Image (cartoon, rainbow, N blue to C red; front, side, top):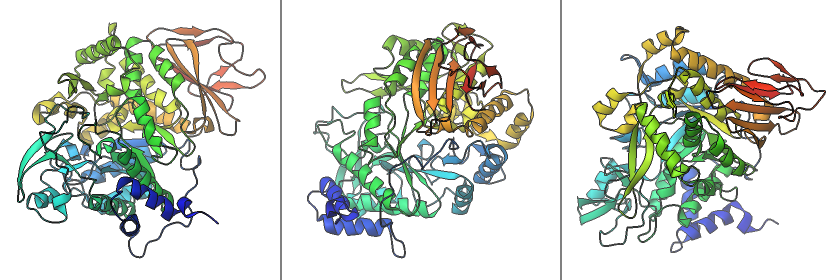
Length: 580
């Protein structure tokens, strides 16, 4: 007989005892089940077994705001849907629509109502329509809500249950070790019906942190996740999850209760009748990031956060030395888990994941080079009162405008190479819409909105964009066409399954080289990426091409023999495979 401790009920009880040791875990467990599986819904009898079937080589994601495309007359979600059907069919099979809720700041990450779609974008019917055609990812902004939300207004008025929804602290407590992603004061003084309170604000004073020590907060979040699943969402992005549990005198990041809450969410996802995938957003150094795989019992997918700064450095330095060193030390994702590989996102290019991987002198050089290309830098506070670069703010396309050696005319080729690397790596590739569209820096938006991140959150006039995409001479058309072709080709290669075998090859510091092998061992691909402006010649025998098999570069169509030298033009990529 299965022991209760290994059953759904036993595992749920154990997690709740860990998170809320003072409460009756049996009663709270019933409330959790009722929140996630309300009346007339049910769970699986057995959990979904970890394996390699949740994704395949056909999976790739587009990341976009609901209003990345506008025309002044149609709903932005209508335009996004049109773009997806017109340009993304067969290119990606999933779409991450960044926070599409009503909000007050931070482009959606200061949510006022998790249950509504921002009416300026569209409505739930528009979300469901996109979810009917593509795997849909939504943001569960776990850590905080808007200071102008109904929840926080009710808190200030002392209304139950919201009077216990927000995390309070005292300026007298030792908060010196708290890890901060921003430079604003941690605590905000507010007047409430119960007197003056100091609420915890990890990110900004318009983003007030929720108090997960109150189980009512967890239950409400579970009800919202259920609503999103019912509306067609199948990938839940746990935004800023590392910060959700606080403790004065500690760094208040990655605390055991945080991991236990992620494990609880994974338990519910594994028993959901729908296929629900959890993605954790933890922009932190590698070991901390990988901890969210847990023991195959936390996130299904984690962002590969070191990639954006490491690929950027390789392209600017013309050397893959540090990228290769990092890749050699990266473990395969555990069974039933995967990496999400990306370069560009709606945020800046995070510098924290480069800590301990890139020497500080290399980081400083890279930042200065991006500044010369029009980029900006955002800072974070350190425990000693100092500041350090938190992220570089620049479109990834414009970050490729020059190298450490200066400006040249190889920007487009350099950029396409940078975007091919995530396609080749173990994991699922994801592409920010402004990377696929070769969007330049939007300095007007920075001046207008007063925030560095606006530089990479341009809103394209959709008719004007369509004209540019129809003109083969524009950078937008060239980049979208090239990357779309490669993604369509990638989707046909079993060796690019997110969990297919990967080995890093040391051939030349200018070449980021990988060997991928399909799960059934039938296909091998040698993925070569020349990150330099030099032509590179690899000698005969540099690759382990088996004699007697037919080898072909999938990208160029060129045949390759096992005993011939292999040439790479500046920024050229090759996918040399034994299966054409």
